[in-house]
Amino acid sequence: MSSLDKVIIHPERRYRCAVYILISVIITATTQWFLLKEGNIGLQQNLNFLQKSLNLSRQNTQQLSEEKLDLHQQNKTLNEISNSQLHEIDIQQATVEELQQQLMALQDQVFTLDKELLFYQNITQGISSAKLQIRELHLTADTLKADTINYRIVITQGKQITKPMTGSVSINIDKDPTVISKQPLNLRFVQLIEGQITIADSTSTKFITISIKKAKKTLLSRTFDWQLTPSIPPEAHHVQKK
Image (cartoon, rainbow, N blue to C red; front, side, top):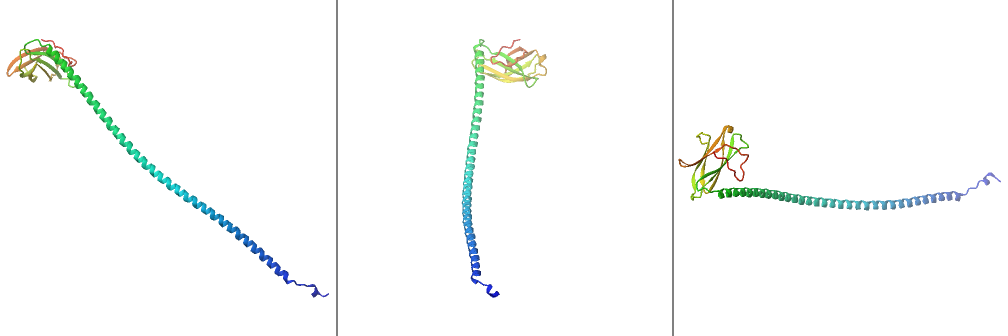
C-alpha cells in the first residue's frame, strides 16, 4: 500500500462542523433576543407603574394644595368673625362702663339732692322768727390754696315776709370796714350763698361780719366768731354768734 492510499479526505465532515457552529450561534442569538425582549417588557411595566405612581402623587399633591388653600380661607374667615366679635364685645364693655359711670353720677346727684332737701327741710322747719335772719355761717380751709377760705351762709326770710327779697350780702373781717366779698341776694324763704375769701394770715382773725343790704341801707348785720370747720356738713351746724 502506497502513502497516497493512507490519506483519505472526507469533505462532508468539514461542512458538518460549520453547520454545528452556525446552529449554536443562532440558538445563542435567539436566546439572548428572547431574554432582552423579556427584560424590555419588564422594564416597560416598571416604567408604566412608576408613571401611574407619579400621576397619582401629582393628583394627591394638587388635592392637598386645594385643601390647604380652602383651610387658609376658612381660617381667614374665622379670624375676621373673631375680630368682629371682639370689637363688638369691646364696644359693649365700653357702653356698660359708661352706663355704670352715668349711674354712679346720677346716684351721687340723687344723694346730694337728698342731703340738700334734708338741709332745707331742717332750716324751714326751724324757722320760728318772723323777721329776716342770717341763720348760719360755715368756714372751711381750701385744700388747694393755703390763703383761701370757703364759706357757706344760710339766710331765711321769716314768716311775716311774704314777698321775695333782693339786695346784696357783704363780708368783713374784724373791725376792718373793707368788704372782702360781696354777692347778690335773691331770697325766697331760704337762700344758700357760697363763695371764697382770701386772707393772708387767718390765724390772727377773730371775727367775721355778714351784712345784708338793699341799695345803701343795711337791713341786717351779724357777727360770728372766726372758726374753721373740717368740711361743710350736709346738715349745717350753727357757728357761735358774737
